[in-house]
Amino acid sequence: MKNNRYLPEGYRIGTAENRSYVSSLAGLERAMTTDAICEAPAIMCDSENYDLRVDLGGVIGIIRREEVQLTGAGEELKNIAVITRVGRPVCFKVQYIDTSGRVPIAYLSRRAAQLECARCYISDLVRGDIIPAKVTHLERFGAFVDIGCGIVSLLPVDCISVSRISHPSERLSLSSRIYVVIKSIDPATGRICVTHRELLGTWEENAAMFAPGQTVAGIVRSVEDYGAFVELTPNLTGLAEPRDDIVCGQSAAVYIKSITPERMKIKLAIVGVYRGEILRDNTTPRYFINPAETHHIDYWRYSPPGCSKIIESVFT
Image (cartoon, rainbow, N blue to C red):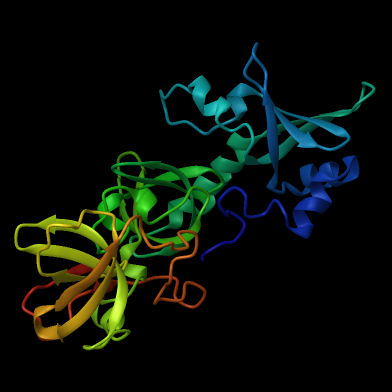
């Protein structure tokens, strides 16, 4: 991680430092003086101006509509972008505090926090950087993830894992805290696309957890005329002989007949199938790269040495 000042929204809200800023008028004044980025929950969007009300205890926190989100040149802020902040942590900088009334009012800017994040953090990211992210929205084509101060990037569904899934919800959950790799950066718009599968291990690393003769749990991911593909891990799938009683999404007990690294093949025999998927923790993926120690990769090869089929990611 290049700079922990610009974390996804929700990461700093429970920290002692953040609480020291948002729990009192003096703390908010200190946040304004030091130009700190703070977080608090948005609790209301008014119906007249679409301003956000932020919970700051004994101080009224207001984010004017025009300060809710950083937009590109010529891009119009939609009301839905404001409304959907309600009930969620929002980051902000304190612009000024009005103490003339009975209750102090702190005027805040999420846009200012995002602008600093974009200029001082996101603009320095390069392809291959490994960064923290938080899942904010799931669509069939991919997951939207917050990569810093509410700035969102797309994680395409085919980049979530090597094993194919039909919807991101099969692998991720809303608000999941994950890590991602910078896949591409559009030079014209600055929009970033990210990937995730490179963190989930190579074929060899995943296959090393299994051996012929074992009976293990899996998930049926696709059914073809020639057999069924059963996921053993998010980055490892084997092929079982066809059966008439299996459908996608079922849990299965499979017997491992053989593992052939040079062909990247695992032959399976289905012992039994059951309704529903195996219960898995979608909030904490198992990473084979430690993001706390490795902050960047230039190259990742999924295929084992000697395999004619090459699956790789190049970030240089």
